[in-house]
Length: 179
Image 1 (cartoon, rainbow, N blue to C red):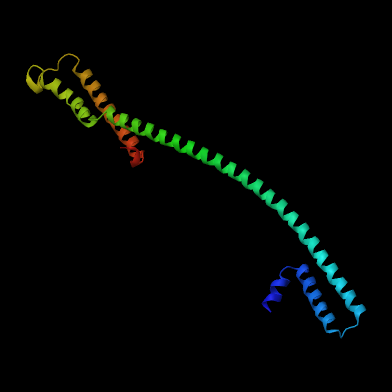
Image 2 (cartoon, helix red, strand yellow):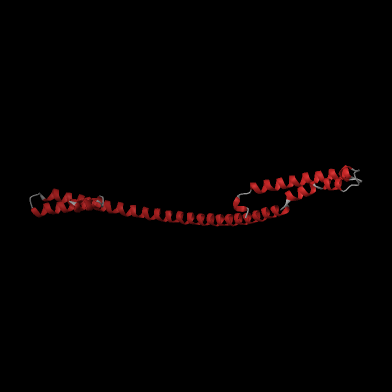
């Protein structure tokens, strides 16, 4: 039974072959009139020929489909290679930009490494000027003391602003780019 199923798996060719074998067995037994059985064998032969032609034409179409798929595969591989090259170039550019960003962050951090101390030192200038005047801290202010206080106050404020801006910039940079 499995032999018959495997023969029928060949389609029209297998069916024609099985019918021809059955006709051959009928002829061997001799119980069947000859003319109808020869017509039946002719039908089996025509069925086998038609099945073979269909199988051959199907095989040609399959070959053409395989060639088309191979061409499409080649095109896809080329597109994949181009995309991989672009990805590698982008990754290389990204690495270069990360390195440049790290250098920039390091440079920004070096601008005022001790900005808080500098701001505190500048803030002390008005007190030093006041204490150095004749008559002690309650004496007469030296020449341009009020201008010195104003300039020192503005400088301390600007230094503190710059330090705050630098700290804000550095804080906004991802941790991986800070070191």
